[in-house]
Image (cartoon, rainbow, N blue to C red; front, side):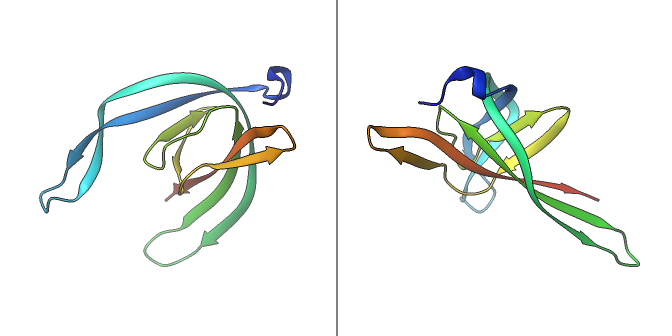
Amino acid sequence: MIREEVLRHFVTVSTGAATTDTYGNPTRDFDDATEVTVRAWVQQTTNDETLSSTGDRLKTTWLAITNEPLDGYDRLTWAGHEFTVDGPTAPMHDRLGIHHYETTLTRVEG
């Protein structure tokens, strides 16, 4: 695993309770979420600004590197910003096994 001193950011991972919506589809309820703080390295990778007469939108994509896998339904809070996990966490390997996990995060404003 990555040495902890490299993972300089402390992030809060929120896991919502499993439930179903009105159509029977699986979803998560974050009103009573379980939260845990983990070490990570977080950095922005892309941004996309959409301007329109109905409102402006800024979508940014971020990368979180952790020693723990995140669930595709989790939310992550760091530096006062809330992110959604975009897809499953990807394990990154070295010659000894799993070295760390990489997770794509999304944040939308507007």
